[in-house]
Image 1: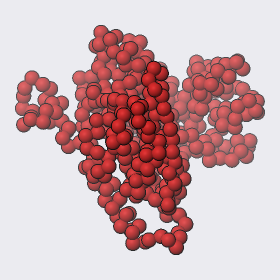
Image 2: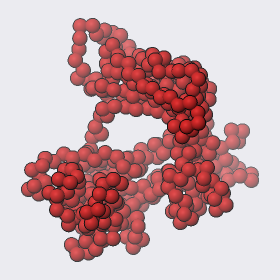
Image 3: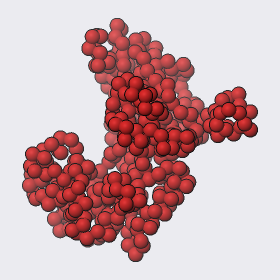
Length: 460
């Protein structure tokens, strides 16, 4: 999964060359969603497994066994279901609470192996190995893999190189070639041997090369990572961008992209979901929009920001052109920037009132928090009420603390509803083994079911 790609170095560094050769390691969880399901259900080991997207729509994760059977990534489930049943493929709905919690555990373990860590996505992180050059980095990588597997149950692959771009390709090589046993260090290869490896990697596998760029590069005769490495940097910059020029430099061992150890504050926060069934009435839409706003407000406070406006949008299903189509967005400015969920929900519902129209079957709704700024540096005005703001801050902190400890949605606003019949379909979701008390595995004395994974509420 791709995340941010932060460049800290000026153009002068690209021209003069890097003054240091810090090794980077990219640690990537193998088939992460599937691996999370297998941790708590070991009977899935060695069997084909797939995980579905929102509303059980498309396949978003596959085990190696499922890939070997020809199951395509992003294939609609309704098309693949019959074949999956015939092949005995286990299928699960996305369990985001479980995956997020397992990701946090993996990243915590990885943080023990380097003082420099960049969490790149839910299943990937970079480690900086400056000062580790005297160590056997392959052996160190194997130690990391063993620790993560032992403590979390998640298998990982590790790529090590002198630049982040090369480390990502080293990780790709470690996963594709069994001879590396899950850890590949490009620093061990001669220039000739490394070029031979890069020649066997399609250019689309290079970090920063998307589908459109890939097609344009092919027209220029650039088909492999080695072709891109040997291309003219100035021509690449003229034809594409300075970012792709930096990619070429990184392929040549010139480090241009540093670790980003602090997660930058988002400039916008979006919260949206497709509904599990068509929604027509304003009450259901209000509950959904309120729930999405509460979640976005929690993220807003977590990064220490306030929002100055909130956008609300609703739309029908564009894949059903035979039904009446409608979509609309409305932005509500706030009287003053804030992070209080009550104020944000009130503004969101005001925006919903402007966009809602009767007679349509709505498929999706969402909100966008905009005009974000740091709460600590927000300019003060004569109209601020310090007492009211202090009460709001304490209340929101209490809500966030309870929800973090007891589970998301434990303490909420009445506007978000209780039944939530509009929620997305997740008919194949596994239990929330690590985040919900009611779904903890129960150990039984005996019985026909597996003793570790019987989650019946009436179990002794």
